[in-house]
Length: 257
Ligand code: NI
Image (tube, rainbow, N blue to C red):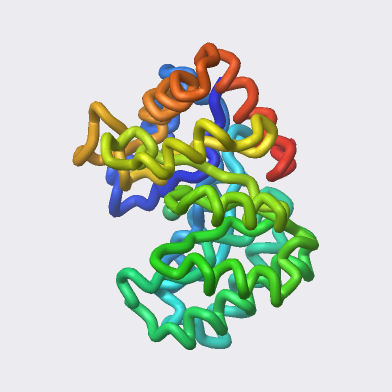
């Protein structure tokens, strides 16, 4: 059974509620789910934690997304710290830098990113990293803050082989979303072909980034089968093997027990 190592199930994306979405995914062969608890004011974190404490096939992450760095005040910081310490929360994330959209000032994004790395280190939990249009800045902060102590995942990997190598050296695994299936994603496909077997994961990042042939539609965890099949094809292995490998990797990295 596949693991969707990164999905957003917020109720404004899925008005039918998370259980219906997860049952569809289970029917498609996806057995376990890491639900990302990030939004501006902590509601997504609360919902993800509650879902993970109610369902044995769901684990949660908690963090402050770089888009919302500007919204992180002391009260929210305190709440996120408490939520992140809960046993079903397996990582701090997604956190990082987004210099593409620049929804929050860059300096503030960097400050919040560093705070989130400190939180992960204090809790001894891995990090889930969001990085867009800021590859070198992201790596530099991970290095400066000693993120290697906890390691983690580069979510929705969309960089090149040089970035991948540095991330792997910092003990970050590479998680591939539907983007890898896009015809123009040659550099990402190169990394998905080359990356060490023990260091790759798959994710939907639902409701975003539906894989081919569903590109442009609302994405959901059941669609991860398309991404997994595509990567198996790139690597010249059976889909079942890719499924087993990536599930083992996610289980080990995020301690999904
Ligand atoms: Ni995400």
